[in-house]
Length: 315
Image (cartoon, rainbow, N blue to C red; front, top):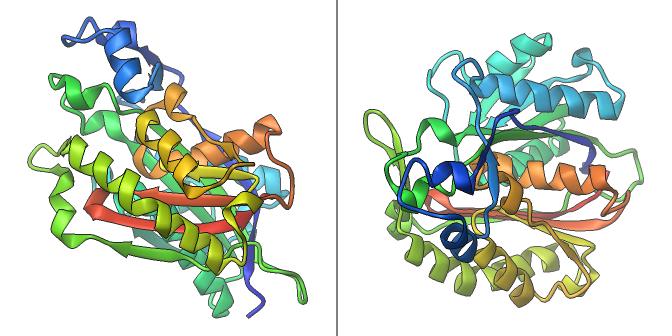
């Protein structure tokens, strides 16, 4: 019951970069139109030989290496994704097999853009209950595979990638490194963000999501801070779901995190769904923008319409 902490993080993106100029050759759009509306300059796109579990395994291997651990040290694997093509074996089992993790509990979590923060809370609760000792928590999505590349309102948004965290039990007497989660959903707005149909395609009601995120989310994010015993001004960083720069910047300001670094990885990576928070968080750690022990708010929102957030300590 001592709680858990993030021991290390890692991320991975495909090598192919798709610029706004490249998109202008596919649909009726241009760099100025995209930047002014969503703030995105580039996004990484996976090839046909790069499935979701490949992205996830690369990110997980980096997190394991950063933690100084081996696959044998892991007994729980959680993969947050909404773009798995095949239903079984699930992504967590496929990643476990790729990495050689022996006999873990292997669970997929599909809460779309809020998937990673849901999975992180699940790992924390599982470790607190004594049902696991170390977990790999991964957010991975291949949004390019569900994009409608003829729809300029959505195809300009998406990118592919993965981010991962190693979560472990805190030493006896140590403060928890993962704060209480605040999570929930708005079922009546479930159709605002969708991945459905055959073949599956991503679609959204952009204005509805924008209005909800910029008005309803700030008090929820502040409550997540309160549950961790912190004021927003105590935060060293804020990592929101990287959906749209026009959502991220006003939302961070309304939360009141006046001293925090605000993750803006959406400009380079686009909307990578469940990968966006761990991807952006891992980059902040790698760049030295935050240091070990710093309090960081992670808050995911979007598909379903679901949300989940918690304050964590930087590894």
